[in-house]
Image 1 (cartoon, rainbow, N blue to C red):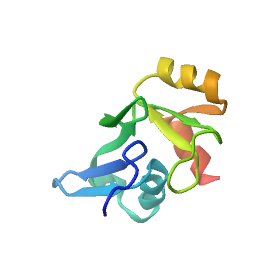
Image 2: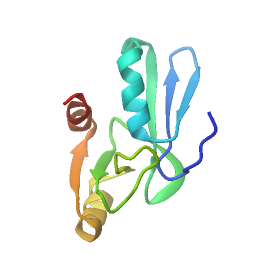
Image 3: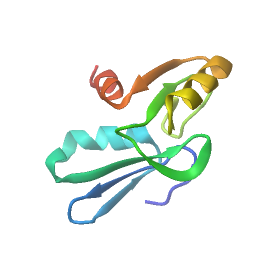
Length: 108
């Protein structure tokens, strides 16, 4: 897949080294419904404050804000740390999530 939006892109790396690329973290999360999670080594998302820098999605902080559009319409952005996410939240509004909270949010 060709990545169009370098700010919101995401990747999955399997234990065998196969890389799956996504335009947005929400696409990666939706893909998990069709994939065996025990085969996954890394979940990566682009850091909103440093576009094209991949971060570990499982330790990232996420912001869903209607003031920050993402390619697939979930308004979801990833941040390397809680401080950056909350600083952006103060400016743009929205809700902050951990990886676990985000997965639960998308199950609903």
